[in-house]
Length: 291
Image (cartoon, rainbow, N blue to C red; front, top):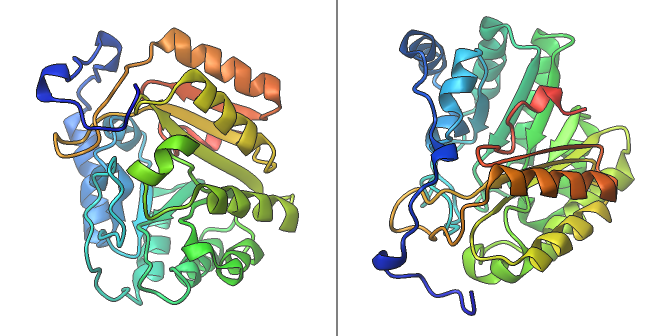
C-alpha cells in the first residue's frame, strides 16, 4: 500500500473462512444481556460489535464499559458512538460492583470511552470502580483498559495508586497509520503511558493490544513490537482488524492463523511474558488466562 487513501468498493476484500463465528447459545447470551441491562451497564462487547461476544457471554463474562457509551474521539476503525457525552452517572461504580457480584466474577475487565471533556479524563471513575469492586468482591482480580487521559501524569498516577492487577492501554495500530487513522491520539504519548505504569509500579501487570490488516507492512509490525517491549509492557494481544461498516477504515489484508502464530512466536522471543494472537483475538479475550 503506497498511500492511505480509502480503496474503492471494487477492491473490498472477502472474509476468509477462518473468520466465521459460530452463533452463540441464545438462552445463555440473553441471560447475561438481561443482567447487564438490569444494572444499566454498557459493555464494549456490544458497543464495538466484538466477534467474541457470544463466546464470552456464554461463559458469563463481559468487558464493562464505564463513563457512558459516547466517545469524544472518532477513530476511523472504531464502531463506538462518538459525539458529546452526557455527564457521568455518579451511581455507576455501585451498579458495576453489584453486577460483578451477581455474575459471580473472579476476574473483571473494565474499560471506558475516551472522555476528553472531563478534567481528569475519567481517571477518578476508574479509581472508584476499582475500590468498590475490591470492597464488595474481595479476591476478585481487576484489569483496567484505560484511555490516554489526555497525557495527564496526575490522572494516570491516580489509577496506578489504586493498584489494579493489570493496567492495559491499547496502541491499536502501527506508528505510520496513527496520524491518519487515529488522529486524536498520539503514538509517543501512548508508549509513555505504558512506560510510566511499568516504572511507577512494576508489580502491576502492563498490557497492550493492536490490530493488523489496516495497511501496515511487516516492518511496521516489528517496529511496534519493539517499541512496546522497550516500555516494559509484559502482555500483548494481536488481532485482525474487521471493518465495522463501509464508512470505517477498510481492511487491506486478512492475515492467516499461521501468520498470527508466527507473530506470537516473534513477540515471545522478544521477551513478552504472555501473547495472544489470532484473527478473532481482542484486547480482553481470555484476559484472566494471561499471566
